[in-house]
Image (cartoon, rainbow, N blue to C red; front, side, top):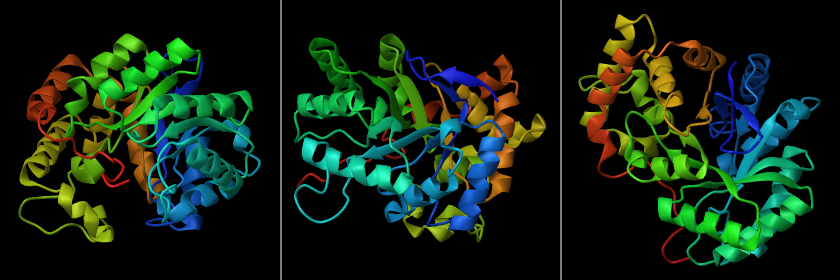
Length: 327
């Protein structure tokens, strides 16, 4: 396994990280635990979850799976998206974040979070309040590093400026939808992160599985695909992305690689990217994706991938999660 520093921090994370959105939903506890243990055995040390994944089941499953193994893991979770009814059941206010951190600690069976991430920008709470709350959590030893997620470039830059001005901890990372099928972060976010030393953690690095080549324009979705197991995913499917997946598959076949491994390797070589988180519902999926770490990304194939995905630098992001406008 290869390891990289997360942004300008001293924290080292595996080039491939484990995303756990499916745990407790599309992967049961036994399967999820098997995936976690396999990942650790292969040198993956970055495990990413959130307080809302599978209705809190993801955190609970991870907490049980890491019994006796917690010190081997850089454990990351998030808070800030909607957790229930009521005006304070969302956002990054002191009230909500303190409540959610304690709940996450209990479910994860740990007394500290290595990377605590704000799941989305909260336009209704002063950034100073959020950052001071995170500062208190760091000082209390319950959080080691802080990160952002789903922040626009200007929102992240504003937070970094306030941290510098007030002496608060800085966001060392940001999570964003980023893949061959969504290169919109390259417009503003990537240059800002390079300049400011913020590590990028792409989510949906395979565009939800589209870049695996499993979808075609002429046949229905495979029975075990996300489009079938999670019907909401169908809103992400369109002809241009399906065509891109087929083009990536051809390039991968010509080089004796899988399209998933090739897509991940391309992303790992992009500026500011620290770790690429991939989900899995079977150990076999993770086995294939691990090949991306050792895959040689020569200039020719990199340029080819850049060329066929160039149009995805523009338009709307593949995914972006924000608070409801009536919050």
